[in-house]
Image (cartoon, rainbow, N blue to C red; front, top):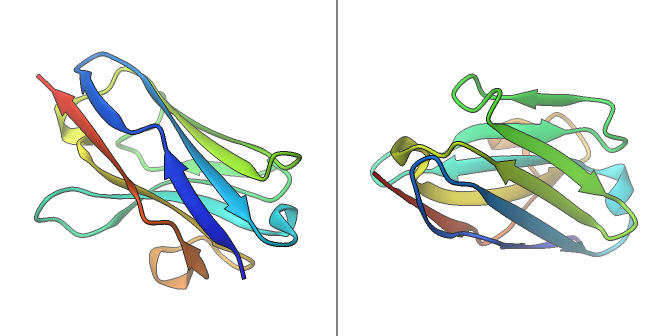
Length: 121
């Protein structure tokens, strides 16, 4: 069983930056691929970024490519999402999730409760 707790959300002006953290508790964090997803008001939850267990694989949604960076520190059982040049359309609840399989919205094994990011124009 893995428990995930996100932090770092808040209110930021357009063009600003935030760094989200997702702290995991439970065994074998370094055997999980991790993903960040987000859900804007009235919209479906969507993929944002993923990272393999060894940081060997990172992929991003086109909408955040070049602005967001995902990373992990297995010693701290934590995954991060550095978000730069934020836009109002990035406003959403951001969730981290873990899987031992493929990082896809409907295939994650564990989810956090989410952290709200609000970007003002």
